[in-house]
Length: 106
Image (cartoon, rainbow, N blue to C red; front, side):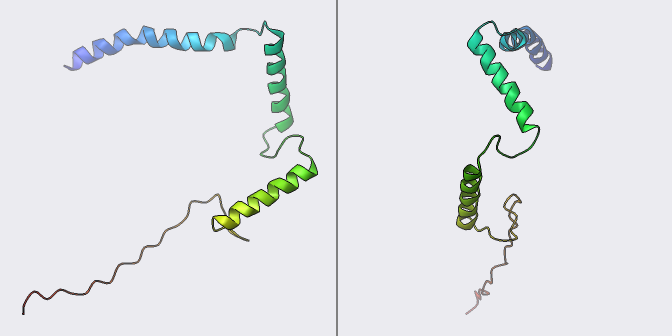
């Protein structure tokens, strides 16, 4: 049984390789379409502008103010506030329920 599964798995390897090469082939080729090249250039420009920061790229002060207002609104709605880390997983505390003893003898 195990040997038949291994043999079937080995037969599937060429199919998987063909699929992966088929998916990666367009990415490995140079862009021949001018629109495609513009898209690639814009993606590279965005990557260089963001430079690993988590902030918005080329955002105006109005946009940043609106973003801050939306984040505050979401924090209030979901229990956040000053000094509350909204990126941390919440800690739950469950109390043991108080159960009355059952007396089966009458």
